[in-house]
Image (tube, rainbow, N blue to C red):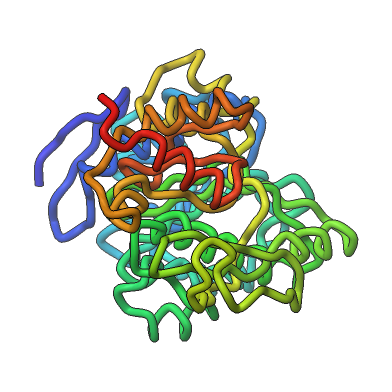
Length: 359
């Protein structure tokens, strides 16, 4: 066991208790998020505490005053309690499962952080019992191979959705996760409002606000739908709703389309929150997110040039070309060489094709 530091926190690691230093940037983002929310008077639940580093940083850097820490692992609960004391804090640390705590706790939390190993699905139904109107949930999934389609059958079993295993997989994975959260939330009479959605390396992380009421729940469900993808020219289509109709043929090349989903097709971000976070501290992925056009799905410029039969062109040039045609277009966090745009597939292909052999 040794003592280390991260942000303003000092804490012990080792002894078989999980700590991942590679997730420090994600914790930086979570701290920034809570700073913007002004958490000093909000009740926070860290449902998967491990070393307790998140809760400690939320207190020392975001002003959190009322945090409850849970961990089913006895060693982790002991270490979290030791680290809380080391930083001069007096938070409650409980050696309980989420299921046991949710079944016995009275009252709700304004902020709930769920960062399990693998999928959040086994814990999410119980976590919903601890939220209320306006509660914010920060949910991590590290089963990215499942959500990104490397294990399609597992994604269908766990999330009830068919994924894509291609250049769109990270965005589709995030939207599958949001679809699952919205469906479970609706059973508790909540709608969801995504505030930030991040897919980076081996994790996905969503920040959502709950809104109570049947109308809100129905509205969220109507923001889900089905997508369809063309493996010949890499175009896509999507349709919102509970039982949407989709064309079976690609409007761009006539090839048969491959369906995927259901998935969330609403917004992924609240730009007022991301811009406020950037005013405090400029983190690279946040800048990309804040500038990203918030529309479903992306186009991979390298894949389109492959379909058109010539070497790749700069996706920045494609963005510039589309903007000159009066369309919106940006880079995206989800794919290097990918673009987001409100242009149709045919307009995107014409824009890419117009850059053939141009410097």
